[in-house]
Length: 37
Image 1 (tube, one colour):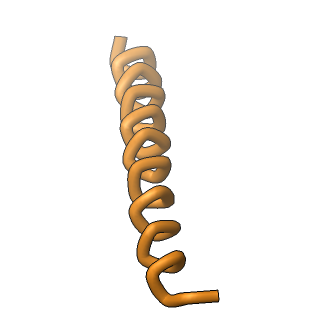
Image 2: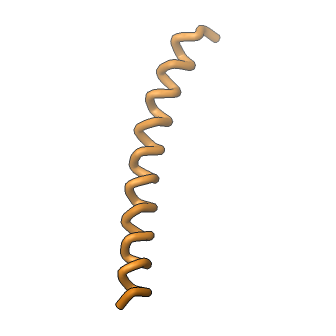
């Protein structure tokens, strides 16, 4: 239970979060364009 593991977990979560955010933005962008069109 070292603090180093927490920092490594944070990096992993940030990468996953970035992927999720990009996916969400893509879906939202597609939805917005769909509504506009």
